[in-house]
Length: 61
Image (tube, rainbow, N blue to C red; front, side):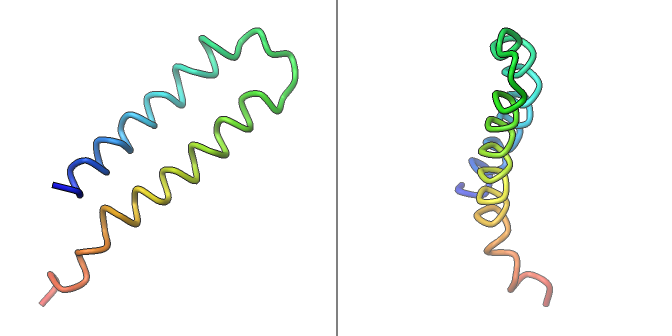
């Protein structure tokens, strides 16, 4: 169940990476507006990938 939720979270974050910078941050003239969003989102995707794959170690036997 946790794996499915984390994978769904990754898909939602990937969708937000397209929606937020072009719809909500388009009025921000500085480069760090969308860069900060993408940096935080990238860190969250890495954490969700760790959660999604932590139980896969014992399945390769």
